[in-house]
Amino acid sequence: MQERGKPLCAYFGATPLARIGIDSVMGYVAHRKGQGIGNRTINMEIGELRRVLKRGKRWQSIADDWKPLPEHSHVGRALALDEKLRLIRTAKSRPEWDTTRLAMMLAPNTATRSCELRGLRWGDVDFMGRMLTIRRSKTEAGERQIPLNSDAVGAILELRERIRAFFGDNVSPDWLVLPHAEGYFKPDPTRPMGLSGWRTARRSLTRAAGLPGLRFHDLRHDTITELAGCQASDQTIMAIAGHVSPPMLAHYWHVRLEAERQALNGLATRSGSISTTGSGADDAGTGTSNWGPDNAS
Image (cartoon, rainbow, N blue to C red; front, side):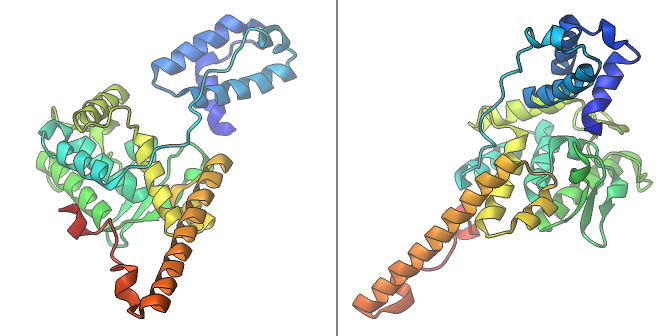
């Protein structure tokens, strides 16, 4: 609730409640959309404003004219293996996509949001402990520590070498891991990547990879889907991903249930094969994963 109130306070300032009408509300909506904020977030912020105006007996004059913005009904998109490989190959084809490529390596390996990555500072990276601390998130529940796997460490180290190429070894812990203007001009590590540049690079990359409409959030969703499919508990998923809404948890519960169903069906197939042919594991399949390196070549 406190997070939702911050942009409202910044926009309306000391404006008296009596002067906030539907025009003011629509002005706020246009302002937030101009900042690239999604409809769902704006609707939640207006919901917070509505509670304040109700207490001041002002919402009744606005209620009939306010219609919530349309929201996506799906929680996200999971990627197939060939789509992931195509995205990686395309990202490596042009130097101006280097930062986007590294961000897209970090996101699925840490289940982080784009706003969390953009606010990440070098002081949040523990190289010795291979740990990432998310201090700035959409909600307090999003503040967490995430263990770094080898792919995430590789992306972090590449970003570190790039900033050292400009500034030497004197990298401040307050500097941003993904600095402003990275890849085009000398970066300013005290400023985050601009939202417009961030989105333009992501959209041009995903179109070139044949994945138009792929959102940065879909990478996070894909990771959580895989965690659910690997039988990770809800507690583990929330510890890694931070806040996960009830509809999303319900979706991942169904993913986990389907993985369990497939595992049990595999046992039934194997048992039937053994009982009819006596040949054992070879008749049930190799046991190798479709996601292994041999299948990626």
